[in-house]
Image (tube, rainbow, N blue to C red; front, top):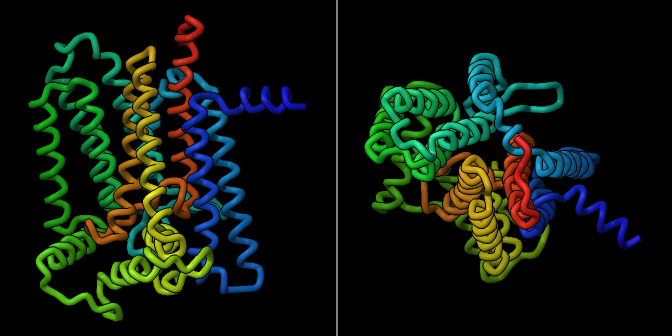
Length: 391
């Protein structure tokens, strides 16, 4: 019986077991905190608590299935069509902007029956894979980074960021940050990186200044509010119905629960925070579980980043190292952005915490990303067996 279980685990949970352990802890805790954070939603009807819980468990089960499947695949083959997939994601973003469902003043979703699909999550994964594929073929020849390559990178990164920032500015910043990291790992000449950063920065400033897209006014307002908080130009009123109302509620949740936790399922601010289950879930964690668990969460993500970095060392192909670096950085950066927003250390964004926050599309594409990282981690086993991955 024990041998059968061991063989089953080995055959389905491929790759770094420490990453699997971290992901398991984060997802299980995320399921528990989501059920609590959705308290306001669960009061809509007698069947809502069960319905929401079953839906979250179904999405979690699907994410683990996808993670397991991708972990057993050859990452080289999986990224073979990343360029085409990226272009397809651009088309889907355009469809969402024109015909998608509007939530929170932005059209980011495409309705597929009972499921809402956010193409920007797909674009984030596809751009990372596409850039990793580009850079891996040029590692040995620095002269290949000519002006043709420069304009190709500028077009690919700029187009992705521009399309996404029209409805989701914070996601475009996250994608751009990941692209910069990949350009450094990919040994792109520093001047080309500076030119690309400058061009995309000017594009973003233009979008916000001329209020292009659906979220430009909101971005301007949030930046102004963040600047006001830094300079203490306005009082922090808990009941003030302004742009920072949600943030003040988040602070109140942290202040009343960080040192004296209220306990699982006993959050009060979940009834006032409109995005308690996603954007401000870290505040609910601190309110219910206290500062100890609140510190344990970022430590888990740092452990995840360390294991992702370890994968880079043992990758037998440049593509594996670049892919793992980009995907790991993207997941960890998004998690810390969510936590920093909850404590008021940055402008309010709409970034969920990977594996913790509610969100079907985000969880699915995070699972695929982790599956690819796990696939790259299998190179270590191949080195031990003196084998090479099959191309």
